[in-house]
Length: 192
Ligand SMILES: [Zn+2]
Image 1 (cartoon, protein in one colour):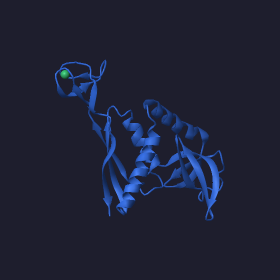
Image 2 (spheres, protein in one colour):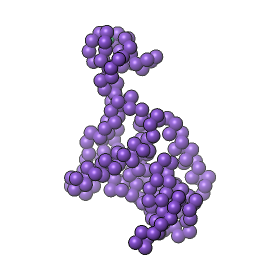
Image 3 (tube, helix red, strand yellow):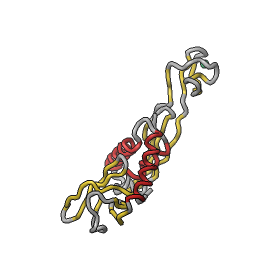
Image 4 (cartoon, protein in one colour):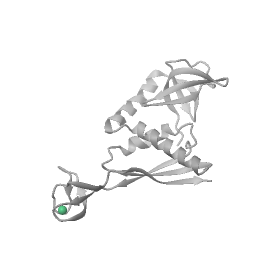
């Protein structure tokens, strides 16, 4: 996923003669090259694609994207952008350890009780992997159903959510969750 996303230029700096900037996308700050947009200044919004700001954008246009990001943020208890960054960093480390040339697919197991919204995480991943070796990777999210250990009918049962976390067989209130809180990378598909 290589989206071009509008971000706000927070700071400019120089790296080996390249004009760089710290650019903020919702809750995420990434570095981007400003070589293609010589007119961009601190406070401007730029469209960033694969680590390069490719054009400046209108503040209103950027605001629409931020509205969307904010709506997504409200859906999550935890912060999807922060989690997406942690996933990207973890995968990059793992890829380096295996001397992988490219990561094609990242498989993630996501429990219904993880507190992370799937759509928001998918969207945030697309931003977080920009300008990294994961830029062309895909995040595949597998839902993990909630399973409880039922104190009444004894054994692992699927859970019902309403009005409380209940055993789907006998309706007793759950005391112990066996599965459903997962937020883990289960597998990477890499090109060696
Ligand atoms: Zn039960």
